[in-house]
Length: 434
Ligand SMILES: [Zn+2]
Ligand SMILES: [Zn+2]
Ligand SMILES: [Zn+2]
Image (tube, rainbow, N blue to C red; front, side):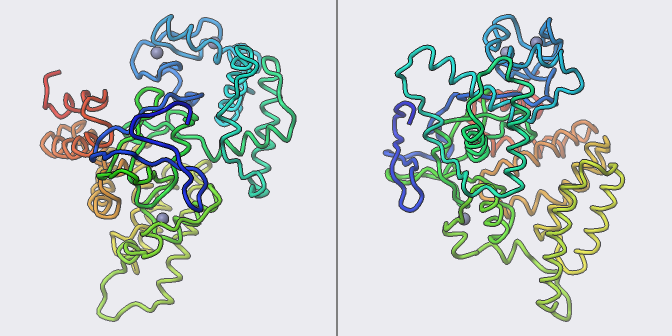
């Protein structure tokens, strides 16, 4: 590890390479450790809402006088961020509309800049992070290789003025390392704020029955127990959305992380049956009909993800409703593929500023979410949070407060009682004075 953390140690996990385990007991909700980002970047779409340096969300941030794009709390944050922001500040002005590196490219540029300053500070200092990360370069398929090639080209185009770039092969390795080991920083409603690299958190292996959860406090990551842990227990997080049945989860893990999970849930598939619940009919539904509908559902989910970028909101909503009707002939409303499309429909309603529509879909989802996700899930808390806020916005206070309280109960475990989000939430739920 990059430093020693009381109560947590690195070990060789059988069959998985390195991992982390606890050396003392931890209770549910207890903080195992916090980790500073080695490098991080704010999403372009969040510019103006958050400070680029410390990720504080507030109104009246000050803009960088040169590019008029990056925003900061104050001069102190601006100065602290300059070593990173200067990689982009003049380039953004020079390229104008044509400035379009991916978030991954932006993060890799920052990692390279940071490695350079570290080398300058001490030539003999071993740069732990990058050599330590798994890359899986040999596993990368053609689509991903093409994407990484595009990212390397963008790095040359937008950043070569400020960086001496390593050779092509090393850059491809770096991109695939960051793809496997990077973390998405999300807010309390799980909306994407940025991407970061956390060396210690990257050591944690995956399980579909995780023992810890990662939340964010500004730009640093907090790792908290979501179940009681005893000395020797491995620290395990989930790399993926746990809503889906075993085959879907493992397809996702193989696609993005190049392994198959062998946790207890993957071995027993104990939740698969409820996750794929079929409608009750007087005549039982033929297995073949169910299989076909599962195939249809997976196809629609893929298509929807792809079409999201090109179709209009009303076309997308129609796609959701149509697929729900089709699947609803076979699947129960609590079936995860139904939930997936209802969640998407809610997102479209939110985008269209239709709170009533969003609430209608959200309420259908949230009950099943609480049953299908593990305890203390951010997917569940963020859903209660959205529903609470939407209802409060429509002055449906008692329904709103009740949903916010449910979010608070979960987030006190996942974020810790003193997290900024909880202080804000208690005000929103009128538990404390404004
Ligand atoms: Zn700041
Ligand atoms: Zn600037
Ligand atoms: Zn598993």
